[in-house]
Image 1 (cartoon, rainbow, N blue to C red):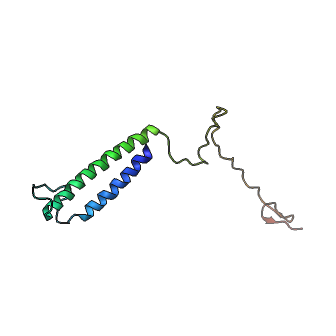
Image 2 (cartoon, one colour; image 1 turned 90 degrees about the vertical axis):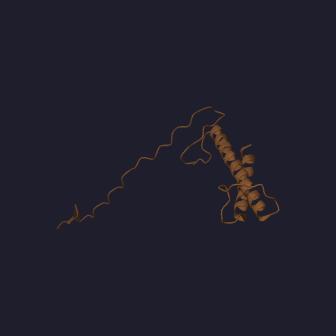
Image 3 (cartoon, rainbow, N blue to C red; image 1 turned 60 degrees about the vertical axis):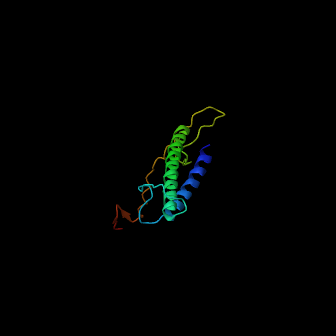
Length: 124
């Protein structure tokens, strides 16, 4: 269901972009008013594009709200980093142990040469 609505919203978005780009830049769009002139005149075409923009924008907003509600119902993150979260084995029913970083061990100090002690040469 989520995927179907997502595809429909994508198609509505493409149609909305096309309708907006077909309008003249002199005004109209969502802010313009309508007049009862004929549909075949230039003004009638602008009114049609204005109505189409309003309808497509409304559908787009409604679909966005529906998709957000569906995503919230599904719960949980959709992308999981395999290193950060380990999934429990459903067959055993055991919970996974939390991942713990390896303890840091200091590197061993290099051995002093036989003729030096503490970085100072020893006279022989």
